[in-house]
Image 1 (cartoon, rainbow, N blue to C red):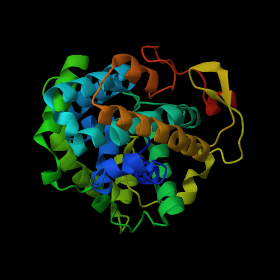
Image 2 (tube, rainbow, N blue to C red):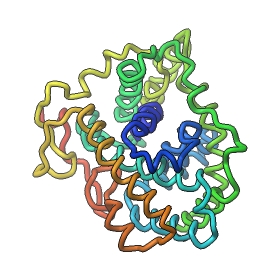
Image 3 (tube, rainbow, N blue to C red):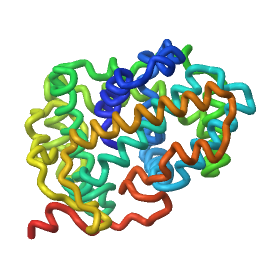
Image 4 (tube, rainbow, N blue to C red):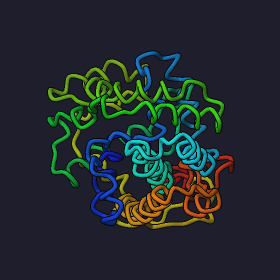
Length: 327
């Protein structure tokens, strides 16, 4: 990730940094904010079905770590050949949506993993501190960037989309590019269904005006499923402070101690906005030219994993965390 609301805020903030030419080609930009959930859509597909969810979590992780450049190029090439590239939603999905989701993850995930102490849920202990931290970051970002109280705000409304805005060309492009790059079958249908299910996920798992879900998650479920605190937004935004590194302490890339930083989460968020706006502007320029050249796409899109921020295909091994280094 980060969490769904942080990505949503990123998409909305990105608009203010794009150049006029890009914005003129995206007159309906505001209506497609859910596209920035990127490969996380696979997690939201039939999220209430544990067998389907677990399989798609694995698919999502695979997309995070492998063939990022290749997927973007394949998507653009397929869209160009079919004529789908002329559709606004097809271009919004890949640039401000999918690519920017991946970029924000790649910039912020190393810091989140370092401070949370893990990335994925431990299958034995059921602990998932990473998800708990990202939930708190969502709450913090809502307060600081939108002045919204996550405890009462009807956050699910931010994730609703008119299905009439989703073109058949978009679904077929997603389907062909996922199949061609990762051998994922029926990926377009999974994304289409996730577009519709995302608001339900946010209502069921995150929105918690009365705090009832927080009690259920924390007191009833948590003894058995340690990641249950990764959901309800009925929490104080100040709980996120220990994970933001606002005092700019030194931290390490969790897989490589030679990569040192003192950036805060907010620093990384803002850098991703600055770097990302350039990428989106240039990618839209390529799309508008109608010439999808592999070298051009590869030179623009960094082939980095959204887990550790380093080169794709590099195996991720969690070695360094704040907890471990403070022992």
